Amino acid sequence: MRKLSAWALVVLVWGFVFLTEAPDALSENSETPVPSVVDINVQQDEDLAANPEAAEEILENDSGPANRDSDTAKLNSDISSSAAEPAPAAKPAAKPAPAAKPAAKPAAKPAPAKSKKQAQTPQGRALTVTAYAYCINGRTASGSYTQKGCIAVDPRVIPMGSKIYIPGYGWGKAMDTGGSIRGNVIDVWFPSNYECMQWGVRTVKITVQ
Image 1 (cartoon, rainbow, N blue to C red):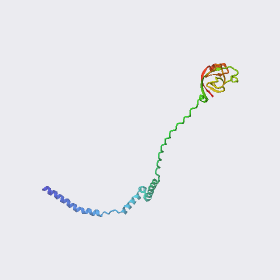
Image 2 (cartoon, rainbow, N blue to C red):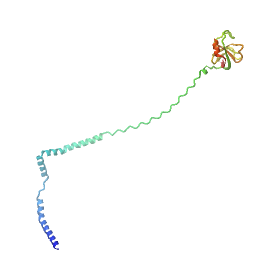
Image 3 (cartoon, helix red, strand yellow):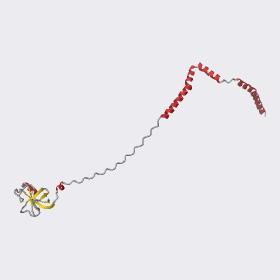
Image 4 (tube, rainbow, N blue to C red):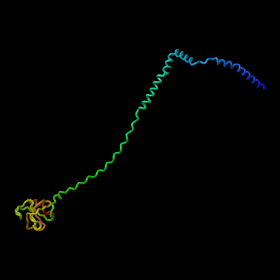
């Protein structure tokens, strides 16, 4: 109980002291004048006048309305230039693939050329005979003299004066006869014995016109 009453006494003393000193503190605070905006500006001007370097730095940092206008104009020019830039041109469409060329038609085969044998084969009566060779010079049965192309025949098989084509010999004419020329037998004339030997005896298919 004694401790509680002692603490209560201390609290009452401190409360009394606070109540007596608080009005004085409030009156002192109310008497302190609050600086106005004008006073602040005047003080700033006096500080700048005392320190010219600080004033120049503030002027450089503070661009003012003119600089702000120039910044705005620059921003507008950047916007207009970006708007004026043309859009990138569209890439040209890919070229279509070339159409496939039609297959070339095969060239027509030329007609087979006629062989020399076919070209020289005349039209007429075909006859297979045994052909001998002789080289006697003189007058023939037709009255003419022996010569290249003179052929002895059997008139019963090949008429006198007929044109005869003999393969390997060429063209001749039925101009002579002979005792041994009977049936499908002929005798072709050569100017020399050597050529007669080269000819020999042949079985050929002749054409009679």
